[in-house]
Length: 296
Image (cartoon, rainbow, N blue to C red; front, top):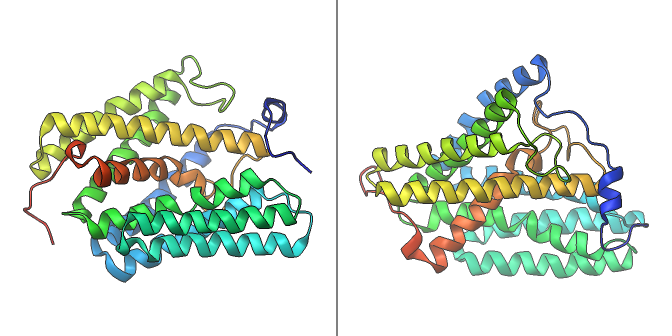
């Protein structure tokens, strides 16, 4: 049984694995997978309603299952299955309650956190791992739907956030592979470099500027917002890499060819979505706006 607090020794003993995009075959898999999934995600965001709820709920439940598979240390079989159920239901509840407000999403996440903690205690596993996992795999997905359905021009705003996060990933991937350089966080990831981080910021800044140009928003506001979301997304990516090192896994699952699992693919977007939702809800003056043209 592992203790509640993961140690650096555990991180050091975890397998580093190869780069996610190592090799030509891996790159092809990533491109094909993205070419199939990206249009589906964009369409769900644009359509909203039940399609968005279904797609987001599916992603949240899969993320919850991946976290439980990775982090549950329960010694009893029924407890482990109860943890799968608890985190999956929590993720679904957070999504379905999103139209009632971000506070309802937070309450669902906290309720799941309480139940998951109790189950971890019964199963003699890590309470902190399951408590955090219940929030980590529910709050971002609820915030995603809340932004889309409950904010002005939510579909355009959410597409802008997606564009910034995707360009962050692309910029980091190709700048890091193309130029190399010193590692950004050797303890957490053996593949991420400072060059990649800078490339990600440049691409995200350009994406923010493009959003302002296309959507009629303030250029400087969107530029800063794009850079800020890029930093948050990269921190979210590093955080998830840290978790995988702590729990000794290379990928959270093999659900997405070339990408790993849902958590592997959406880690940066999850962090950026929560950050954007908090800014929009509690610091609206800092949230950039878009023109009403094109709104539903």
